[in-house]
Image (cartoon, rainbow, N blue to C red; front, side, top):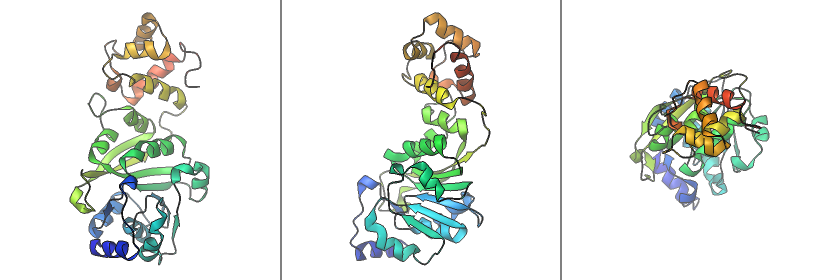
Length: 283
């Protein structure tokens, strides 16, 4: 597909833009493996963000019931017409998905849909968190990102890669790396290797929890990674040391803990305690 892709781009006068993170996969067997590991079947509706030249879109169309794709670069219209125009189960929307109302995006999808995206670094966290926190019908997210970002998304608490986004994912589901993709597999090759992360949404996980309040505590916990959590709580929520220490003890968290040492469950427990101490937590 690489030769065909280059020919298509030249034919339609499209020069790839770094600003859009345009590095396209062209290996058909790799694309097929990604779709297989994403668990896409004929019963599934797929939301693809960042269709590019349509190579992955074609594989998705061959496996899914329906594909709704968002592509920000309107110059790729004629390219996508050639690569996926033959499929009657594909609808490409040329718009920035982050500028669309999420309710409007989901209105065009079946409930229980799968998101597939090849994301540049700058937009990875905003898209993941928007859909994790606000989407109503999403079942799974399968995301191609830089490998170092993938390690953060899937990190274990207490490790250097663990961060606020890791907690955010763990509050709604579970992330795992399903495929590592070396830079040579892209056209043009980027400067870093990539990986495909699968995030499975677990319905009912932490059911009844005030997620806005938990997110406030998570932000506080990671506000100064070098500081102990007790100090972050004092600074972030204007608590006395005695109040902060008592809150940690009530949540069975060591007084010497730092934000990155807490699991999602720890943050839920701590939030429950802090709601009795901090007024308007998460509001």
